[in-house]
Length: 196
Length: 196
Length: 246
Image (tube, rainbow over all chains, first blue to last red):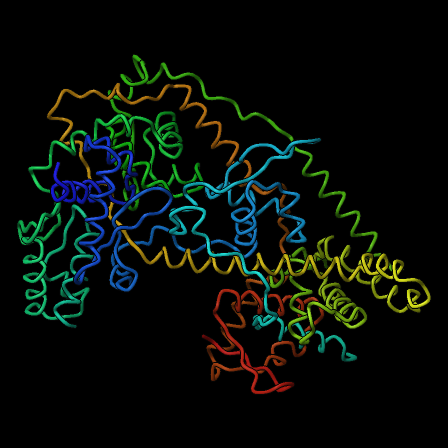
């Protein structure tokens, strides 16, 4: 098959598979071509999509290719459809997820060591949302459950692979703007400190 | 809005609206533009689509515009449906299928209640694989779609009828030590709370 | 009256410490033991006044800090000893261990922020539903027996949901009706703001209220801020805080 034709068929296949997307292996099977030529087709299609004013793009996340709209047009689509992954994770769940993502496979005890608090609940939340899964058992006594991230995690965070995670901050600066809650906390302290 | 930008947004809008498509009036509303300029945008987009090797096209039928695949690529889509790569079901699809099989007729909301995550995607996958189908509407407000299994489902799982499904596994009762641990911590805290 | 409300403002003792360090412009690599301990204990005291459920981790950290503080108040002995002794002493500096933990935690806290950004970014991309191709396969001899899944796979899947569902359920929950609920107070505060000019001094919300009511009010304000229904302003340091409707 010529690259040009393949390009067109790949576009059609990605269109049809929609939000589910397809991985390269599936594409190769349906096309009856080897991975190398499929890669060429994908490249050609990606090049096409990067030219001119397009409203759709190819997104590779979690090993899957799919067509999506562009971020800058989001306001128009919000009127029409619900976003697939609205940010709903609590700070506790996010911190736990960050530790798992960067350290996987990692045990609950290690997570709690870093966070300094019990983390059973956020782990459950993340399991429930299919963002993490059990990834084996630790060696040694107890054989603690180890956790790792799932393909759904990559998909929900728009990451091609785990290597695409932004680098872990090295030397954290101490600049950090905390919320207003603290202001109230202090005022509240004053309320009580005053003799009533 | 410039015609070029409008072209892109229209492409995105037609893409997300999928099989339902959109008519020009709807497009004009979402874009916040008059019909005349929307027409220009559509023309520009149609011209783009007629160039080069594309796998999707703009179809105007009954006043509605939609993106569709091309007839000449149909053999590949057939292959996609029958592809061995799509033969295995994802964990999400399997879970959804299990709930539908045992609880049918059942609504999407009920499925999501049990799974704890959104389940639109696996439902579509199962519909596409002909393992489930719409099985009426719920009573009351909203009249939600109810899902049930198909004859193909029975065939696939080697069942003569739905009654032949094995009984559901009982909830393995794992009374965890959780409660005790919490009790311990409460006691621990009391220790601290006591005036020293 | 006892409230079992977890204060959501901080993620734990490390988070609270980080906050105190930042607020007081302290050097994370050289934390003054006495100062940080006093500040920390002050917060714990306030939480107690509020009768909040203080997680045990906060108390453990309090003990660690107190120990650290007292060891620093003792005359430094290493001056009288040889170099190797000093080295040993330095290794055992409890501040060292705390500093490492704080830095490590801070790295992941920042990473969590980056993840949040990624998620938000991704949520701005939309796709379309999978096309319904059933028409295509209906033309053919349908061969769904191709699907490589057995009944057992399905049963496995089901038991996995059940265990997941169990995990989602709270381990225990005690629901008790308070005579004066946070919800009620939240509504009241919103009403007050809605009726007036939309701005009220923070202190005014607490006037002529019993202690339990003050606590409830405080928690209601926190909840309202969390859900972004109200905001607050402070012109300068030590000025009166003004609560306003968003």
